[in-house]
Image 1 (spheres, one colour):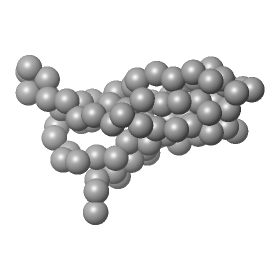
Image 2 (cartoon, rainbow, N blue to C red):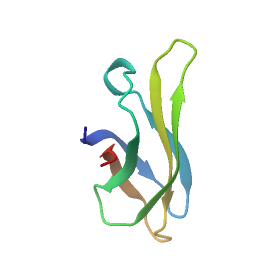
Image 3 (cartoon, rainbow, N blue to C red):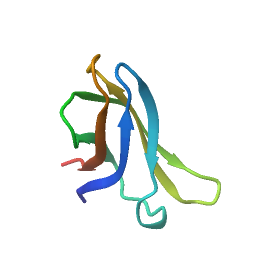
Image 4 (cartoon, helix red, strand yellow):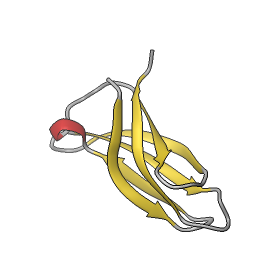
Length: 84
């Protein structure tokens, strides 16, 4: 199941942070690829994708996002989907 436009964040030049998504109350959507969709000009690398099952049984999907543009902040949302 594909998803687009989840959340909104801005990342400073040359910085990185981890960000996760709890989809539809924490349902298990199987293997999901999570990526950045730049909303402003710039380049973002996504890596270290993780699927977590919490103690209460819900599932979270996480990734680390890196702003590769050394001169400007980049705003983005998350997008992705299941493996085919």
